Every structure is written in structure tokens, then in C-alpha cells.
Length: 492
Length: 140
Image 1 (cartoon, rainbow over the protein chains, first blue to last red):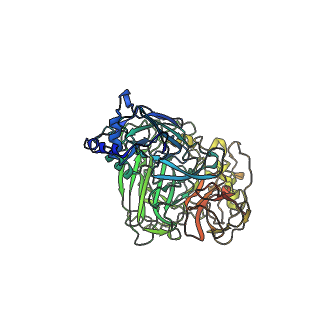
Image 2: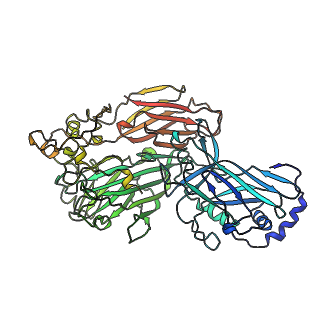
Image 3: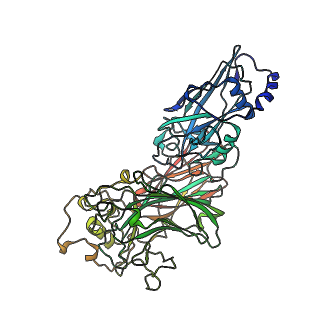
């Protein structure tokens, strides 16, 4: 603190007992952080309701000589930021308290997390305190924040009594990060707002700090007070992109070989401790297209070493505009490795009212698909060398044939399927052609009935050269034979 | 799995890495090719339909390959308390990001396509005085 005139005497602390006996509820503030800057009058609540200095003092006393603000992090879900995890960094903060006699300026502050970041125009990184959050309600109940979406806490030590303050004003400037460096700067930029603020009662501080919204998936998080559990993260295929897997569901027949009978985008990341051992697994993805009449379920399997134990949650998100259903949360059974049914009954889950196919006809209107996310915590850390390798085992179960379809080299895993009994345990045909392929997210799958070799003429040369030439064949589709839809259409 | 070894010796050193062992049949020489925008082929004599072109060459039609990037941290000398490692592809998409401690050598398994190269590896701390060490990893 910079005391411009003189410090408060300790005698003023005698007042603390009187204020602390009164229960106090968290209070929303009128002013917000907009475009990275906030000029906040702490004596003005939402709806222009006056907040008395005595009330501010009660907040300060209840929080052990600190003003603690709740922050609703409200960033755009772009780049590596997403609904589950988004963040900003604080460049500087000034709290100015004016009394009849003095003006006090406080510039110390803290949050629960930091990250090493470069500001705009610089490539040198240093620590900045960060604010993390996610979209949606914080589930606070029984206070004035009930139903709001506050995420994180901002603590400002204040060692003077505030009850006789004439004004209490907070200026906060978020860090303008050098987004050209990618993450972590791109994640911690401020791209949207407004960030709402609230004065927090101690019980809500504890609740938000326990929730740690968005922390699990945020990049380069260093906890301010305790060792960081997830110290680093490895991404498959990357922090901001997806695998796109396409299937031919006529297996063991090649069918029309258009690899669009089901198309799914997904990505996976491992959270690592400081010994580079895997302690968490996260994944998310989208239904992209369904070009078959068969009904399927789509699974993602990540094998774990024998004896591994884990638990987690899975959420299925219903796309905007779909009237039925809502966000679902289910628990994942990880007793025999991770094998999650992420999209079930695809014909009823993902359909186009105007067609028997979804997003695979050249002239079809785009239909948004469901998306999923799951988070898994391993009971015991597993070394990276012991982990299954990407792109893991994304597989399709076809109800009509009772057969599983995996990537080449994988084996059937479902006891209820007929693969083993029919001797269908290899997922290539006699010529070595597969029934499932994984591509980068910008791959444009063939339109309905278009053989992948016709849609991508260089594929044949790639195969016949034993993968030595035309290695970028999947980027060179015949425009009239491949989907017109891109990531901007399906990612929501 | 291909192994890429990277030694943190001198900042701004451009490394060309030979990938040995592991994954078979993989050339990742990237050729620029214009987007094809021609009518679909209908002459079966010249068809590229896979079902019209049975081949005895059984080869994986996979696009992604697994690599193990081995990074030696022994020579990294920084003042800061923390060490951060970032690996990104040519599109600046993060493949690995976070704090690393107590490791002389770090092995990071990656699953990437040929056009992800060159990769960029950065080591930095929480202090401005520690210049970010940056390397490019080129697959040869």
C-alpha cells in the first residue's frame, strides 16, 4: 500500500467486532470490466443501489482484512478458450480509498492462479495473475449471487478501516497479450467481456475457490499458494484442433467407400503432473455427418495399464435450436480402461428432417450435431510411456450388423458384438483398404456415394507409392466431390 | 514411433533432425499441390476409385504419425524459479504446454501430420530477464 498521508491507527480495528457480527450477503456491482478496462465504484451496486462504506468495511472484516471480488469471466470461446475453460490476465490494479483526511492507494492484489505471459508487442514473458472461468452458472445458492455465473476471486489486501470512506474506486486493467505467440497468450487475451464483478461474502469466496472453474483445462496454470496438480498438458492432435474420423459402415463390405457413414471430430489432452505422469484425461468432440442408414453408437477407447483406476464425468451437449433434451451429465465407468459411449443411436440423435442423410448430400442444409466433453481423473499417475498412443481407438458399433469398426491395427472390444464369432477381427479388407480413417479437422469428407479415391484422386498414387508420394492427398479433394462444410459450420 | 532428439545447447540454433527407426513406410516430404477442381472421373480405364484398383501393396492409409520428441534440458540455464516448455506446430497450435521441473530429459509423444513441421520448441521462465530459448524441429 502507498499511504499518501498517514496510516490508519490500530485503534480503528476496535470497530471490527461490531461489523463482523452482522451476516452479510455477496453484492453485485454496477460497473464491469469492458474491453479490458474497468473503473469500478465499489459503493455502487447493481441497479444503482448504494453500498455504504460500513457495508464495505463489513466485507473487509469478514474476509480477514481483504476485499475479495468475484469475477464473471466472460470470454469468447475461440482458439483454445472454450465454454469449459476461459481466462484473462491482470496487468495492473489500483484501489483508491478517499476519506476526509487522506487518500490511500492499494496496488497489491492476488488471484489463485498465475501464468507466464508476454504482453502485446513483446516476446519476453513474466508472471501475471490470471482469472479463470467457464460458461454457465456457478451453482451458488442461498445468496444474492444465486443463478449468476461468477467464476474466480480477486483479493485486495486493505489494512485501513473503510467505514468512513467518501469514495472507494477500483481501476483494473487486463493484460493485452501477444496473441501472435499462440498459447498461453491467446488463451489469456481479453476478447469479449463484459466481466461482471461482485463483493463477496466469505462463504461465497470459499465456494468459488473450491469450484476452481475452468482451471483444469486452462494452459500454463501456476497456483499462487500451492503446488500445481496439472503442471503441463500434452494435446492430441493440438490444443485448438480436432481429429476427424470417418467410417464405412458396410463392413466387411466396402460399400460406396465414401467414408461418411459417420463422421466425428474429437480431441484428447493429458494433464501431467510435475513428473510428467498422466493424472487427468480430457476429451471433447462433435458429430459432423451421418451418411448411412444404419444406426450406430460411437465410442472412444483409451487403454490404460492393467489395474488402473479412474473416475470422471461425461457431458453431452444438445445443439442450439434442438428443442428436446438438455445438458446431460453421466458418470464414466473406467474399471477396464476408458471406453466411453459418446454418441448413441445416431439415427435418432442426428437427423435431417429433409433427408435420410445428415450433411452428406451436396445440396443439403447444414445440421448442427451434438457435442460431448469428458474429464477423467486417474487414481494413480501413469507414465506417458505406459499410455495408449494417439489417435487412440475411436470406434463405431453398428446396431444393424452387430459389428464393431475400428481403425486398422485395433481389435474388437465389445463382448456383445459378432466380430469375434464371425472372424471379423481385422479392420482392413483383402486389399488392405480400411473402414475407418483419421484426418486433420479441415478434411472435407466425400459427398454421398462418392468413393474416396474419386473424391481424392491422389490417394491412389499415395497408396501405390507405399506412402512415399502425394502425402498431402487429403488436402486436394475434387471440389464437386467433397463436403462444402468446414469447421466454422460444425464447431459451436 | 519415430524419435526426434533435441538438445538445448545454443539459443536460435536451427536443428534438422533425422528421424530413425519406428514407423514404417513414411516419407513426410511435403509437396505443394494446387487444389484440384476437375470433373469427377467416369472412365473406368482411368478410374481412381479404390474398389476398381485392388492393390497387393498392403499399406496403412494413415495420415497421422507418432513421434517421440526427446528434449535435453541439462544445458538450460535460467534465473527464474520455474521452467515452462511449449511445443507447437507450424500453425502455432500447441502440442505441449506447461511447467516442467526436475527432468534432465523430457520425452513427449506426439501424433502429428507431415505438414505440422517445422515444430517450434520454446523454453522460458517467469522472469523477463530470461530470454525465451526457441528451436525449430524440421523433419528430414
